[in-house]
View 1 (cartoon, rainbow, N blue to C red):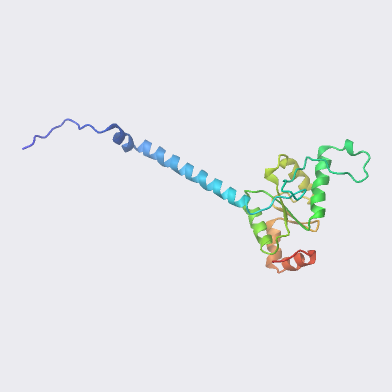
View 2 (cartoon, rainbow, N blue to C red; view 1 turned 180 degrees about the vertical axis):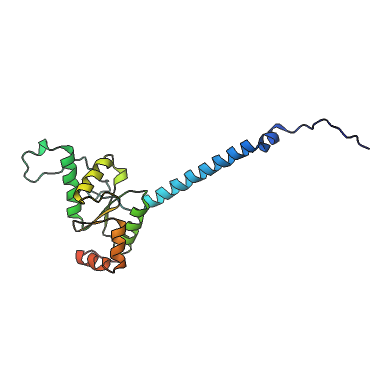
Length: 189
């Protein structure tokens, strides 16, 4: 018959390491954080691919708000402040595009507004403000142009600010979005 021993048995070091509740909790926390990080990266990449960047020359170059644009007869154009120049460039984008959306690539409201607009037409110009170097300045200018609307997205139809995603959704629910887009002359899907 075997004798009963009161001497503790040796447990391999790795096995003892994994038996610790603190270590298991730390491993669980790290795996969870990596999972959330991976999910965040995939979500932001997916949101970013649903919109097109505004192009200046049709050759795939992204919008560069720092480039000089020809001034229409302004003799004192060299004396303008950078904010005035930025405001003119943003106003030019609004005036020359029938549907202009100022968006943030990670914003779920911006993604919903773009999805709704794209369900009607592909004739939309989008500027992802968070991908620009001077995003805070762009937001200040947009707030001024949109008369106080300071959140994203900021949507303009034929130069007129309609606000954001909630206002766009309200137009859709009232059945007014399609007629407004038809009145703009954009090609509908």
